[in-house]
Amino acid sequence: MRDSDVKKEIERIEEALERKADNARELGLDYEPEEDLVYRLRKRAEIRRQIPTRKSVQENQPDRLSNLLEEAATEIERLRDNNISAGIDRNTIIVSEYDIGTEEGLNKFIQSRNR
Image 1 (cartoon, rainbow, N blue to C red):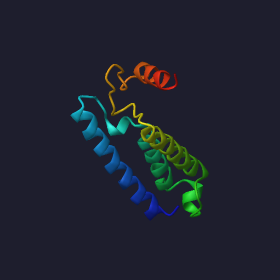
Image 2 (cartoon, one colour):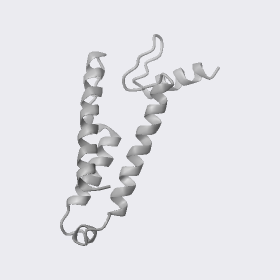
Image 3 (tube, rainbow, N blue to C red):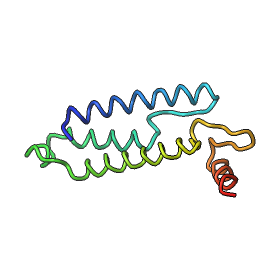
């Protein structure tokens, strides 16, 4: 992935996180984008790629750990998208008797759907 592609992807993710935070605030939930795991993984990858003393930066080579961080973030997003498609989003959806904003509420909701 080129640096320009990475920057565009980070901008896209930051915009999505801001929308997610707005949605959470509308629902009365606390949510800070900087606390999101995907955001932190991508930000760490971006920072690693900009450290001028890193050998991979000096040789204009890919940073394998940064790529792995990006890959993990992408996989987490994919899994989240699948959960949203199934009607589960623990950060933004509250279903009547289940508080999906908590881990316990999410587990109860999932158990009820699997019955």
